[in-house]
Length: 294
Image 1 (cartoon, rainbow, N blue to C red):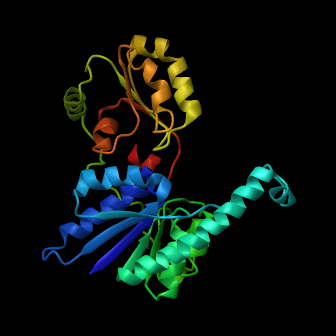
Image 2 (image 1 turned 120 degrees about the vertical axis):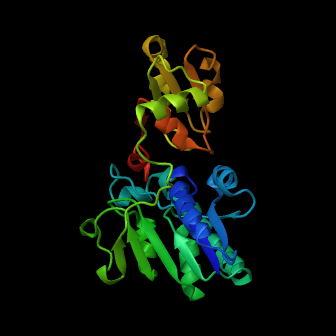
């Protein structure tokens, strides 16, 4: 059986997909399942790190060109057509999606999966439409209580829809929708104080001071990063601070990495659960699975 999973490529999309992959492979006693993951080009390096750390070279990661539709609450409908950066961005991304559709068609013709699992993100739109054209079943999973535009479009082509929140929060067709929650790896559970201390030691942290973990997601959150660095002299008097800055700002923040009790990471691709379980406090930007991970 061939299974394709697709998603934006950020941790919020990839981590639940990894949990699904693990369950599928655990039940595949004959080695008959072939799995691939496709994501947005921008997130491919990040997704490859996560997938490779979990599965080695068993699961191939590929990218599809896609773009988003910019819609801003502070702009009126007509202003979206008069603000150059918005208009030009949407114009360029429209053609990215058209190219992504033909790219998806070409790839799906030469490697035709039995089902496609879409986790969200605009990259799933050209993939989902291509799947509909080729009559390949699509299953979508929506982690958000308020569905994004991509999943609302994909719902028109989906055979099955799974949701992270109860169905009353969605307008999806009830006859094909099921509330299943958000897939998680078995490592994400409540840890005892003794287990937390053991993980602190394993990761090289002191057990004598509280550990605060700050994360803004795979690409990072500039305001969170800057606020954390600004308060470091005060914070490190009483705590150890782990800042997962995201890849975009990592080099800029490295100059602060020599401070005592401050640990800077651009991205943690392997065993993120260890850091979360070791922390006494987690400060995180809201995302598709951030509440779940905490």
